Amino acid sequence: MFRHNALRYAVLVVLLAAALFQAFTAEYFGLEILTEILILAILVLALDIVAGFGGMVSLCHGALMGVGAYAYALLSAKAGIAPPLAMAGAVALTGVTAWAIGAICSRSHGIYFIMATLAFGQMAYSYVFEALVFGGDDGLGGIARLDLGLFGIDLNDSRSFALFCLAALGAVYGAAVLILRSGLGRSLSGVMHNEQRMRALGLTVWRVKADVFGLSGMIAGLAGALAAQHIMYISPGLLSWTVSGEALVVVILGGLGTLVGPLVGAAAFVVLKHELSGLTSYWHLVVGVILIAVVMSRANGIFGWIEARWGDRIERRVADATRKPEPEEATSDA
Image 1 (cartoon, rainbow, N blue to C red):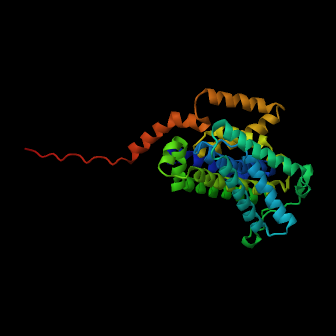
Image 2: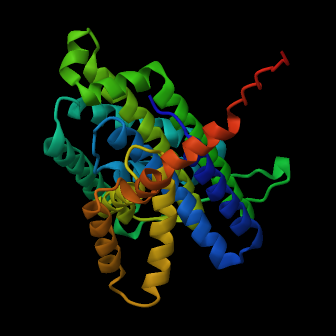
Image 3: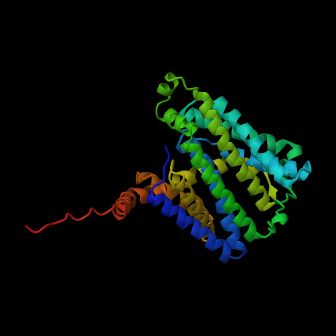
């Protein structure tokens, strides 16, 4: 079962403090980078739930994010539905789509599962690219952000929108923890470690995989709806397999199966991308070298490396600090 330790809590606090500091001190460009990090973090949390805790390495989460983005755009801009309802509808539709994909792919494993999800993602990309209702290769524009004027919040302001995305990320992280600590999450862990035994115990394995994949898809759909509002424009490139590939790179870079690690990976990936792209157009090469170094080090990403070296030490220090001192034995003079 997923649990936090002192190091994970400490990293979460540092990440939250850094995000809040950036949100209240940065100018427009810095706020745009922060928002990009937060939306990517939501997507990779969705991927980490299925890949890190269920062994289902997916290459269609970029497409699921695109489904959420296009669903929100069509419901709000084309159908004229109020943005809050359009956002809820987009999340629900993406969840249903992901559940169906999870149910179909549930009997495949390893490379076959990866290729099956890749095929679903590519089918979605090809359909959106050709369909006129989705704008074809021109994409869709004129996408409105949520109207929170009733609460005195203007999401058209970059700072307010960044804080809104931060709040959404916090809610998603809490939901992910609840999922992994629930009976469904424990069943998922059992399926990953020994699927045959769980099936022998009477568990409906395909249903567990489909349910978790559906919940993960809802989170990816939320990331897509936020991405559509962020840029106020979407194109078929959002459904490309390269988006799913980048999400998987971020999860591995941060730390697979930790929840905290993907947040670290999202921040590191976006910062590296923007810093290195200003120096060279081959920034993917540098990120690739870093990823190879992380994998060859046999550490579970950046956070896994940190946890392996300082986690036990911090746990011992916390235990020593919280241990009650034993009372001194009373002595009496003879």
